[in-house]
Amino acid sequence: MRIPASLFMGCLLMACVAGMGTAQVAADVPRDHFAYGAITELASKGLVKGFPPQGNFWGSRTATRYEMATIIQRVLARVEEITARKVEAPTAPQPATAGLTPADLEAVRKLVSEYKTELVVIGADLQKARDAIGELRTLVDSATETANRALSTAGAAQTKTDELAKEFGDLKESYSIGRTEFETLSKDVKSHKLSGYLQARFEASDHFGSSLFPENGGAGTTGVNGSAGGITPGTAGYGFLVRRARLKFGGPVSARTDYAIQADLTSVGAMAVKDAYVNVNDLPFPQRFSLTAGLFAPSFGVELPHSSSTRESPERAAGFSDSNASLAVFKTPSSTASAAGTATKGAVLPLFAGQDRDTGVAMTWSGPNYNNPTSKITLGVFNGEGRGASGVRNNNQAVDTVARAQTTLLGGNLDLGISGYYGTLTVRSAAPTSGVSAPYMQGYRMLLGSDVRYIAPFGTTFRAEYAGGVFEASPDRSLYLKGNHAQTWLVSARHPINRRLDLALKYDEFMPISQAGVRFEGLGRAGYIRKTLQGGLLYYMDEATRFRLWYTRGLTPYDPSAAAGPGRSRLGLITGEIQVTY
View 1 (cartoon, one colour):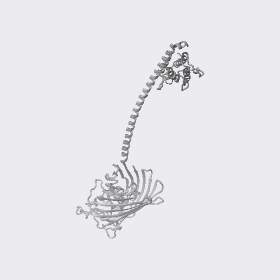
View 2 (cartoon, one colour):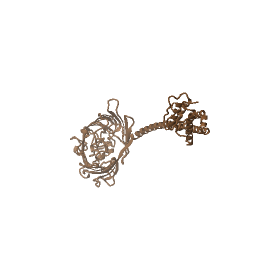
View 3 (spheres, one colour):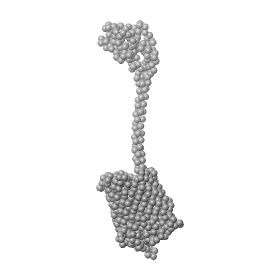
View 4 (cartoon, helix red, strand yellow):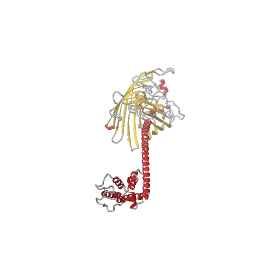
């Protein structure tokens, strides 16, 4: 049997593709011969090597079977070369020898079987060829198995990766949810915070060696009650005390509502609740309205509700104070005597005794900038009884009304405010008879107030405040005093010497009887007037710690009812204080 030379030429051309990627077959090769596809496929996979060396064939003549056997012998030589190198099975999913498959080895075996006679004639070792083909089959099978196993392993790994990715996604989602919940909880915990301040003091009167401060202490003979804290005649002339120890806890309970609770633990007297209120913001009717209810500071002026932690003086000005602590250099009555209706000649109490906080409800309208309004109007109603360590109920059979309007101008450098108070106060109708107290009655308390604060270009803060009107109680608040008027005012200046040190001065006057012709216990307006000049230094060590050195001087006699002696002295009080805010 003879094969066309063109087929042989095509097969020989394909033998050159060991280092090339294509095989070329002459156009006159019969395409229905099985050797065409087999030789082409084997040549493309590098199994026909080094033939013909010149790249030319026999033209268009027909190739002989021996010439075809020579090509097959080249194929067998290539198989031997591959097996001789003992190719190891690859780990990647790719068959050995450029994609060689068991089908390719079957084609080689078929060609050897077809041309075995010619192969023997030309000297081919068929047994060796069969062994090589078998060994190569083993290698290919091993490589294929390894590749399949690798593919299976890769598939399993991909499946595991997908599972891990899903688990990671679930874990990430759980972490995200947990983190969100933690942040929400953390935010809630942080928003409900504990704050406050503590004032530790040393106080000394500049007259502590006089008879006003007996060595054995006690109440003395002046009707002084030192239980409100601080140094006052009739008690020791100097000593340490914790003036204020405030603990405040509060925060939001919803988007609109917040609350606050504040207690005061001083070194004298019982622990008192200072604040216990709720705020409801953004009420559903007119915008920018908020509601405050509970025990809180009435909005009258600045000096009364202003926090003592930021005020320039250790105590409020005498007329605006809530206790007799601000009147340490003046004579004040015993609380028992006042409650019983027993007058204390020459003694005074402030307009808002015990009323730095009161129980009631207030409505506030804030300007368009809700967080930092430049204008605000507040209207509230209160019991008018103030607060007490054991609680206070309304005894007036009426409620008091407090109103305030304030605005800020000049880029925040000027504050203006007006306030009003309309209500009653409970005082005894007469002195006790045979040890029996007279009934209480209601005296009118109708006050107007105004205040201004200005920050000058050179940094000094100036402040002034006034309050006055009807106040139908005696200066010591022991008895009803029909038609009485009272008034009080103050001015202060505070200048920063440097970024840590401030210098402050303050002057105030308090007239519990402000109109001529009205007298109580033999004294009129001039007898009861209280004038105070005070000043000192405030040093801020850091954002939490402040030192204050302060001197308060009474410019009117301690006891105006005294005709002579120590009672006519003008007392001074020295205060050294450390305040820590937390």
